[in-house]
Each structure stands twice: as C-alpha cells, then as structure tokens.
Image (cartoon, rainbow, N blue to C red; front, side, top):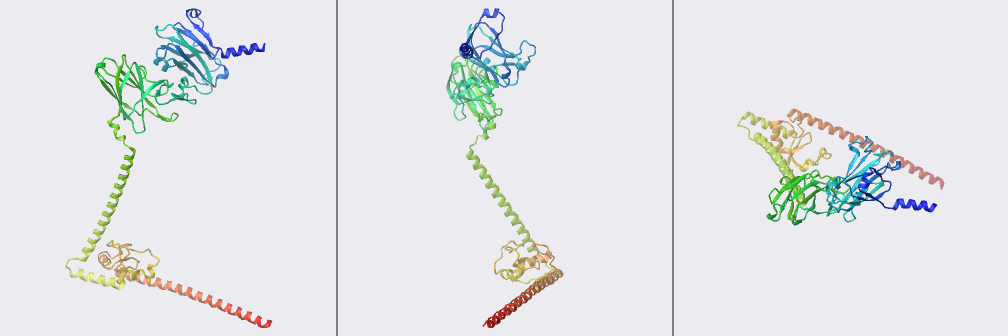
Length: 503
C-alpha cells in the first residue's frame, strides 16, 4: 500500500500530462484546472482557457507561467498569451491582466508571464487565455509550465552562458556581445563610431545595437542601400532604447523610425540621454535597431557623432594637455599682472620723488627743503646699511632687505637712514619723501621736527630703562654669586677644622 502511494506521488510530480484542446473540448464548455506543474498541450482550436489557484504557502513566491512552442517555429507563432486574476468574479481590474507583449509582437516560440509575490491570496484564481490569431497553422504544440520560486526567473534562462547571464534579484538577462532581446535570443551586430557596417545582407529581419559611452549624447544613424536597384524593397528600420521590458524594437514598439520612401539612404539624429547606466549589468543601456525588408537586400549602416556633440569626441590625452596649457597661461598672466602692478607703484613713487627733487625755482621752497634736510641729518644721520643692522634695536626685528620707497635692494655699503620708528630707507629716498609728506613711508608715523624730537627722547628713555633693568639684574647676580662664594668658603673652613681635631 505504501509503495502504491509513493508511486502515485512520483507520477504526479514527474509525469508530463498531455492535453488535447480540440472542438470536442470546446463543446464541453469546461475550463480546465491546472493542478500539475507542466503540461504538453496540442491545441487545434483558436481560443482556449485554463486556470490555476495558488496555495497559501505560495504567497511569498514568484509564480512564472511559460509557453515553450514545438510548433510552429520561432517567428511564426502568432497568438496572444495573457493571464487574468479573478476573471469571472467581477473583481478584476486592468492591473490584474498580464501580457507577454515581447512574445506577442515578435512571434516568439518562447513566451513568459511572471506574477509577483504578495499580490494574491489563496482564494484568487488565475485564468490563462491562449488565443491563436492566424489560420496558417492549424495545430499548435507547446509545453505549459508553472513554476513557483523565491527568486525571479529570467526569460528562457537567458539562453546559455555564451548568450547571457541571469540576475535572479531583478529577473533581467545580462546579454553578452552579439546577443540582444529580453532572453538574449536574438543575434545582433554591434555598431561602432570608427567603422560603418557595409554589404550587410538582410534576408527578412536583422538586429543591431549601439552602446553609448559617457561622452556621446547625440548620434546620427545612417542607413542606405548598396545598390539603387533595391529602391522598391521597402527597407525599414525600427530604433528603440533598451528598457528590459519590451525587448527588441518592432512595428508596435519603437522610438525612432527610418523608411526609404524611394530614396537610397536615410539618416536620423538620435538623442542618447535616455540610455541610462545600469548598475546590475555594469554598462549603459543599448540602442537597439531592427532592420526589416520584404526581399533580400544589401545595406550599409553607420553611426556618427552629430555636430552639436562633436566637441565631446576628444581623446582623453588631449584633454589633459589642454588643461595643463590653460593652467600655464593663467600662471603666466598672473605673474605679468604682478610685475605691472609693482612697476606702476615704483613709477608713481619715483614721480613723486622727482617732483620733490625738482621743485619750481622758488626761494622759499629751497629754504624749506634745506631746513628739512638739516633736521633729518640731526635726528636720522646717514649710516651704512651693515652698520644699522648691528644696532641693538634691529636685533629682534625682521630684516628689511629692500627700500619701500624705490623698491631696490640694499647693499652692505649703501648709505641709509633709519627712523625712530625703526624702519630703514635709502638716505635720499627718505629725504625726498619727508620733504613732501613728513611721515614714515611704511607706518605713517609723523616725522616733523617736533615728532622726531619726541620719538628720540622716548627711545633714549626706553634705552635708559632697559639698561637700568639690565644693571639691576647684573647687581643681583653679583650679590647671589658673593653669597654663594662666602657659603662655600665657610664650609671649606669647617671641613678643615674637623680634620685637625680628628688628628
């Protein structure tokens, strides 16, 4: 008895149930309930409907329904495959109807519909409608599979490892080069900006694709006949942005369209910005192209950068060179501007000095200049630059290496003057400056006769106080040293007396 139960279970699991959908089945007006995971179906009538009901434990799973056709072949399957939730309960909405549009409009021998988890419960029923749309083939043969999985299934498992790989998190096929469509089932030729495709034979339908990069945002797609005798061949091209929902372009789904209209060539400008970068596939979405014809033709197909986008088609090494040259030019201009500013400042100061040096022939002005120079000689005498730097006042200050009036560097033997505010200038530069301005060129301290006298007295007083403090410190050090010497001498005498008493 136990063996019979086990045999029955295995038969239900692995046995392939065959269904014949013919006029007799249609006359019964029954809707067949699908209880197994797969069925071999022979359908000879135009329309048929099945239904299945998920279990409660299936609510967190993806339910995938697949149709794999044995007859007719790919490209000749002309039917509409749909699933409707609760079709006859008057509760279904437009969102409860699912289609495989990719399979429908490409006449594919593999079609798939996937229902997401947590969108149904145990009381829902899903009705599968398969409606044949032509009369060329009277008998359709297909495998109907119902699969329940935790992860998403990719369409047709992406073919094989050579055509594409499946991402089970997204249910999207990552098609390798030479393959396109949702299930990577269509062989396609890549288009390049460098070389156009020529002498391409189109028997009925061929597929191409272009993969953008970061720089290119606009291209011109050109399609032409290799021989003018094919003008009446009705060659058409459908162009679409890859979206992983509709597959390759066709007469129902396309973004751009090219037709000849009695011309041997046509071009179309295409914006590539809708092709976004896909993180799962690690590439930009592709531009997909389908070329169709009613009779065999030879064509050429090329892609070029449009004029508005040509400035972006630059070699990266040239970009680096342009950037470096631009930086060098900016630095050179900055240096020139600094030199010009310094030159203008120096010229302005020299003009002021020359103006003072060559006053009008006025006796009062001459007398005043002589008086000022006498005052300068009295309070700020001429000294060599090296001698000035040895003064104590300048030991703790930052060394001035250039004259702030003429902007020339000092030499050791250059005659200079230093102000009571501790600034150094060429002797003649300071003379001409004070004649006109009567202040320090650097800190603007007043340098008239009264101010010079006060500054000099203040400097003398500061020096006296500083010396007095140094003398006090020296006297204090002498007292301390004397005490130390006296203490040491007393200790030596005590040591000597102790030595005598011991003997």
